[in-house]
Length: 339
Image 1 (cartoon, rainbow, N blue to C red):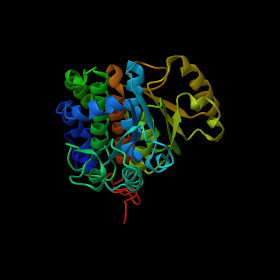
Image 2 (image 1 turned 120 degrees about the vertical axis):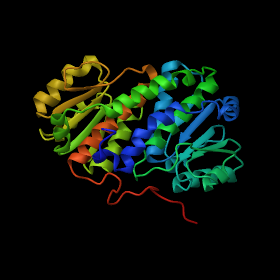
Image 3 (image 1 turned 90 degrees about the vertical axis):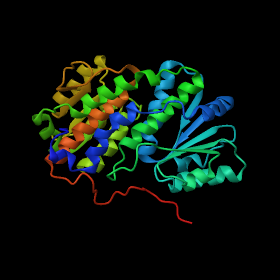
């Protein structure tokens, strides 16, 4: 994305994306300290929400906790399925931009009626329905988004969880790393994408995203639907080499985030040589595939990867002549609580 080109900046979606690094730079890593102490006493944290308000925030937080060996039990599930679980001895944290997401409201109503005392929420709306049911509610600082697709809110939600878990684990490092992270995110957002790769993606029959189960590629799969209006699928880990090739063809593209180096030859053999499709990597190193190269940010790299993925999807959407702010069917509030 070019920050000085009206072709990009006329869209609220791209303005939201480009504003994200400064939201990261200004993020307050201490505002959730009181809640962190309460959750630490419980010892078990259940992360819920729907769509973009759960996928990257919850899964990136869980990966970071496992990587760093933080001693807290974590689990995530969407709000509707969570209503079938016994969560009596868990602290529950729900994310909902609107604060009116039906599945999450249903879960919190059920738990509140049972007398649950550890219900926490983060919304973009002041005095929301979800906050009113919570024992403690927080509001995002990023401001209203200019498009249907959620972007800057997703990053702030993920940072909130990251800071919360650092507080619980008494391993507060995030504040000292935000400036560097913001710089690397800016570089990923404004990286010039090879026009030949953009054309491949824009003309693809299906756009597949391969990568770890940390929310990055799963969220980018959703963004592909919203931004390019193309069919997309999330291929976790090395799933792309385990049977899905049967329904792929040469008109498909696989975008592989942070490839496992020892799996590259297998992907090449099965997907590029076997199917005839194109594999494009997003990585902090050179790979055997065409590579969109970004900076390494350690265990915060998923944030940089997300920005690179946004950049790629915006380029494809603009190439296709799509109004990035106005999907034909998708809504800002996916399923709003009524009654």
